[in-house]
Image 1 (cartoon, one colour):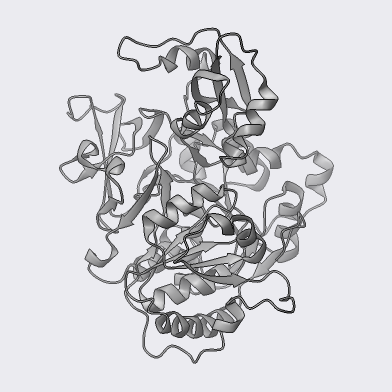
Image 2 (tube, rainbow, N blue to C red; image 1 turned 180 degrees about the vertical axis):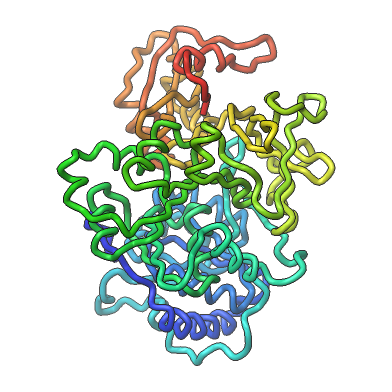
Length: 499
């Protein structure tokens, strides 16, 4: 695994995983990493990811997965908030952020190339020299995901795994069958970034199931995806709408080169999948596509098959086992079937969750054991969910959650910016793109290139606005809140979905 653009595919060796995870668990325990301790991971897609997460399962630690595109300050904020004591990182990624890391943080290098003479860093290979961990795995704590808050501050999501009767690993095992339909001889391919909660969780389900092969791609390329399905006889795949759009853009000659008849199941999460995209994928591959609505706080919540999508176009399905949905109006009253309101969810299988900072307090988002993550939608008479809009300003671009407030805060630091508004606009490939309306300081001529150049030094590249427009004045309400709807609405005119 290197930092190059070459695409690699690794097949997880389960015997080696078990051996190495037990040895690493012993090394972690020797460093006082035990139940509820926090371990952070800053790695590209790599099967060694699961050596680390499995070792955490043995000792009962939680693992925080870090977006390796993020700037050093963004990574530091999460490390500080989570209280992570140990960071596993690919060597080149570690070098890029080393100056921003806490002094007390212990580092373990995951090498992408042999160590050079004189390099004395603790590395993963060294830790794997320990004796195998004695005893069974601890009760699963699992992933400790982070998502930006509406103020731009990262929010940690602590799931109440310990309060659940039984081990959540057993729930994962069940989901490998009931949610992913994995069985003996199946081969699951995931090439979405493992720092995202959904693909990471799907891999964990497959690991818990213990029957299917798990193959990890370094990144997605449409033609390479088809070649991998053909070469590896892939039966199951994780796809987000952006990947599907890119597949559908391939010329017919490229499609015909590959035998994709082995692929019988694909699951999509992260962003709503346009109806025409779903239909085109199912027409090409057969009725393989399932879509799920989920959130980092609550895992997967609904599920819809290809056949159901044809009968219920636009729906993201019905609740999975353990999930109950309610649609509430602004007075927190239940809406009748067909009426749009805020989506409230109770997810009983995984227990409650809490945020790690005051910005994430659930007080305003919980009703009688149900919580909302800010999305709006409706239930039809048969209990199928349709998502229509969101109350908060979150942008979903290529399955990635982006919060405008964070970008706005950085824009307002720039000397030439007097005011700004950031929001999502339609994008054929990514679903939404980041758009910024900027009011320059008096006498200043707006310069898109300069704005983007300055932002790239402070925020991840995917948060940098793809469209920038300059306005002499931006509309603000009497309360001081900017009137974004008036700016955003023209871009979405004539569209049924607003996300």
